[in-house]
Amino acid sequence: MATLVSVNVGMPRDVGWHGKTVHTGIYKSPVDGPVMARRLNLDGDGQGDLGGHGGEQRAVLAYQLESIEYWRRELGRDDIGHGHFGENFTVSGLPDDEVCIGDRYRIGEAEFEVTQPRVTCYRVGMRLGVPSMPSLLVAHHRPGFYLRVIAEGMVRAGDSIERTRRGPHALSVAETDALLYLPDRSFPRLRDAIDIPALSPGWQQSFRELLDGGGAPAVGVEPGWAGFRPLRVVALTPESSAILSVRLESADGSRLPVPRPGQYVTVRVDGAVRSYSLSSGADDGTYRISVKRDGKVSTYLHTSLQVGAVIEAAAPRGEFVLIEGSSPVLLISAGVGVTPVLAMLHQLAASGSSREVWWLQTAHDAATQAFADEARQLLRALPHGREHVFFGRAQTVAGIGALGLPVSADAYICGPQGFMDDMRAALTGAGLDPGRLHTELFGARSAINPGLTAPAAVVAPHQPVGAAGTGPRVTFARSGLTVPSGDGSLLELAEACDVPTRWSCRTGVCHTCVTPVLSGDVSYEPEPLERPAAGEALLCCARPVDDLVLDI
Image (tube, rainbow, N blue to C red; front, side, top):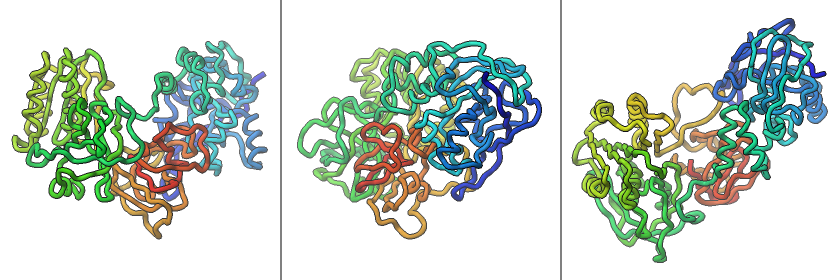
């Protein structure tokens, strides 16, 4: 007979960790007497990071007494008790290889449904003082599982646990966990997983992406190339008072691979690395980048670059690309953000698209409006093309709502962050689906650092404090920073430089930190449970083998 051994609760607290502060609910303590199980959590319990924990699908975390005893032996520890894995329910008789997604259980007065395995989160390692714990839980097939509260009621330690329903497809918690995090996954079982209504939406989406080939590098229509290759400048064209177009061809005269409209290339000029959108069509085997003069590299391109010069470039990449279909298209830009959506307009015109296409461009004034004639000519080739030009962000925000934009449209938005935020709000207010609003931001990506409290001030990327490393040089392309590496991981190096990072498990399991590698090679320590696709690296456990350029 399965049994509820202990009920454990705890409210979030701030905990010091690696010089930072983590707001976490990982610390749970056993409770004497009955506890009310409610739809979102147990009375007296809370979660610090509601993006990854808690909510209706993850109201209660269960972990097995048998697994706790296993880890005591495995780790040589006698100080691990009930609640130390962050679990609300310490249970006996419900192993991860037997409990299935969609199973329902009666415990005390309440009924629960199994929704997903435990999230691979660094905080369980922080709680136990074992940083590799997220990886160990997956590798040893002992993750534990989340429960949804089907019927609220009182529960208490000692309650018997009765299974009231078996989930469809008999997909165990351990097998579900392995499908997401381990290699050699079964695609028929992935299809079974997304057919289980009880499986939480986040895991459903992850499995759909795996079935669709999600997670592969977003490269061009044709295969690109590894690292950087020489490209020759064949034309320089001023587009406005601040924007210069640079036409590039292969240095050996061969046709360049076809990019997807909206992608960018990363160029290396005199040791400095910058990324620029491709701004033209892709039918002549050359590339065009269009550069706003606003820094050292762009100033060099504007003032010193000559026709015939050779610069280095990485292959086209990026996920801000035109999606094929029949729905209306809104191409919305501000300033030099016009470049990727102009490439999309080229593609639509070249294909003679019958889609309704709206060209909505914002500029400071007529002198700074780039590509006005080119865009107008392309729009004339479209049977349903429309153009609206705004001078000033305020005019754009005020004008968007009055245009009568089709609510079924896919919108592609590129410009400064404030502009894109305003456009998102305006378009959502006009009735467009937020899921069909696509944005592109140049510069560093936004950080994903679950549980960390926000710093008092945002610090720009910089050289690390203290003695410089002696390892291979690492370039963070989006941050415009090159530093010598030290003994730690690439994630630790990025954090030392205040380069915005994305991570969750920090042990090579979740792939949140996966980052495109533009050139160079990495090794892994520790080895991740599953390596990323070619051309990518897991920063949390990767170290540079030679000089490295990362798209971060």
